[in-house]
Length: 239
Image (cartoon, helix red, strand yellow):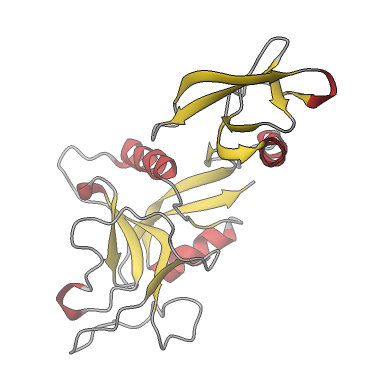
């Protein structure tokens, strides 16, 4: 399959064309589908760059220059050539595994590490929808049992010197626990996307709920929980 890219064009999405490098405006939907709008221009000769890759379709890139799209496409082509390990499933340039055993947040992080992975980050609505569907497909329960799934977020408290929470303590206080900043353990970056359930995070009943999980009974929305609780978990491996 051929990709054609205008080298210096400003565009939203990369579009395929038979002979010309066609730039069109797309509106990216949460389902990763795109709606084609009007054509913005074409280019010829040395300004038109062609890539060939099997089995890939147009990829939404966001509003970028042609050069920045070129870099992104080169990275996508690199990861498309790699396969996910057995029992992992691919989404974009990462592989994911929903693990069917229960562990504390810290033990889950350790177990992911043994597979060369980490407790997953969720940084977009598309990724959230994907992993929610994966978890639901694997652990649907007709009786309505609520499964929890650890993911890689944690609350870094103002006086907390360690890089992540202490999962060995009960984390229960007699006064309201302090409020900190939620970050991803793998990257150390604050959340730029969130999917909190209503009234979360809340440090329920005065407990220090410093680790992040998703609840199947809440449509896989996020909930803060005590790190020593045991839940299933989801690992991510970047290609």
